[in-house]
Each structure stands twice: as structure tokens, then as C-alpha cells.
Length: 249
Image: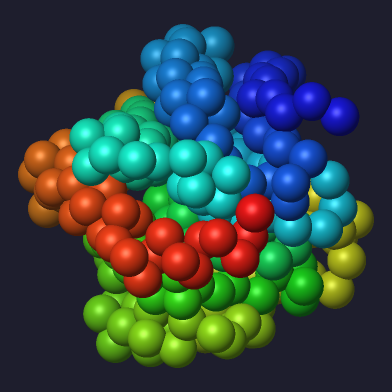
């Protein structure tokens, strides 16, 4: 199947779904389309609540596209690539609607950042998380603010330093990333839909004001995440990272 980002609006609920055949990894074009779709749907007056999900029944998101990382040959190009994740997170942050995350499987790197940037996130027991960036010589610089905001610096630093390990979905729930963890995708989907329908009964103005309150203190993220993208863009050109990425060719 071809990679895609698609949206569906039904009964005031917008569902945004992204997909990539390589375990839902995210190349630049998909990141750009995802950010634009979130902004577009967020500004649609017919929408009260957004559900963010990925295609397939296994990996939620494998993070950055290794094929694209391998092709980066200059810092400016690297900054542009990592800014793709910054743009998605900032689009989610600025979106005036609550975004419900539906995490069906394992989540790596940038995918953890996207999950953390949702306003309410539910998952299956298969949704283990990992920040693997240090393994390839970079770090989770762009997504770190979103993850820190949700689970705290201590827990974020634990998974960032222990870059080899997957942390189980229940660990992520205990730390505050996930609100609920279900045994099956079917149970997850039922609860996500039920919760979205319930949110549609709320005053949309009240939800919008609450979202502003929840994200207070992140007003500098346009600049902060751009600075973090520049760090990753520089490090991806290091000899260490270049040698490591060769293994993925």
C-alpha cells in the first residue's frame, strides 16, 4: 500500500489517519501533510473532536524514516527534516479542538512525541514505547518537550538514556502518557469512539478554553522546536551517525 494521510468527518468527530508501509515511519512529505491536515480539521467549525490514529494493526509509528535520514548530507536539510516533527507537534498544540490519541501498537522515537502531544491518549497492551535516537547518534531533541510535558523529565530521561529498551504500555500509563490500556484493538476502538462521542456533548468554547489552559507555558515552542531540529540536523551528519545509519541500508 502507498503511504497516506486521510481524514473522515462524521457526527462532529474528525478521524485523521496516517500510514506508511514501513511500520508507519514518517518521511517529510507525510509529516507535512499530517501537520496541514491537523490544522485544517482544527479550523473546521463542523468538527468538535479529533481522533488521531495510524493504519494497520501493529506499529503505531516507527518514528523518523531511516531511508530519508540516510540521504541527508547537509545540516540545513537535516533541520528541515526534523522540523517536520516540530510542525506536527506545534499543529497539535495550536489546534483548538481536543485530540484523542489511538495507539494500537509499538511506538518509537518521533511517534512517542506525537502520542504525547495528543490531549487524551488511549492504547492497547501492545503499545510499548521506545526512544531509540541515542542508538543512532542523535537524540529525541524535538519531541522531548512534548514528552517531558506529559510524563515528566525523570521518566523522559529514563527512556531517552535507555535507548535500547521498549517500555511496556502499562509503564506509559503509570507515567501519564496513556490514560487507559486495553487488551485488544477492538476494545480500544470502542472506548475511543465512545469517549469522542461523549466529548461532543461538551460546550466547544469551554473545551477550547481548557485546551489553552492545558498548553499554557508552551508559547515559545515554535522557536524552541526549531532550535532542537537544528541540533538533530547537525548530529545526523556526525561520523558516528553516518556509520550507524549505513547498517540500515
